[in-house]
Image 1 (cartoon, rainbow, N blue to C red):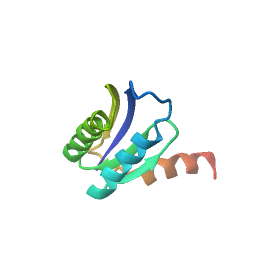
Image 2 (image 1 turned 90 degrees about the vertical axis):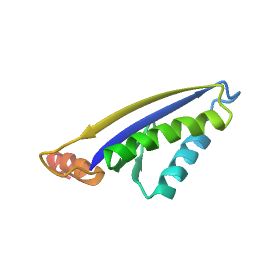
Image 3 (image 1 turned 90 degrees about the horizontal axis):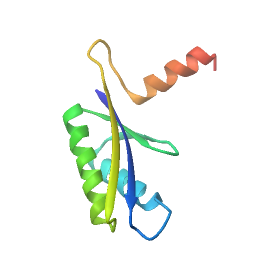
Length: 100
C-alpha cells in the first residue's frame, strides 16, 4: 500500500475559504473506499499507487469543475516494498518514539 499526500489550491474562486474543495475531495475518495487522514494543510490517502494517481487526477479535475479558474495541486507519494505501509502505522510509530 502507498500513501498520497495532496494539497489543492483553487485560484480565482472569489473567496478565501477552501473547505468546500476539501469536502468535495474527501467525498470523492470516500465514494471510492479510500482511507484518509485530514490535516490543516493537506489530506493523506492510502491505497494502491496506481489508484492514488487516479484519485489525485480526479481531485484536481473536480476542483477545476467546481468553480476555480486555476488550480495548483501538490502531491507527495510514499511507497515501500520492504514492509507494509499505512497511515496508522506511520502515526503510531512516531507516538511510540515519543513515549505516548
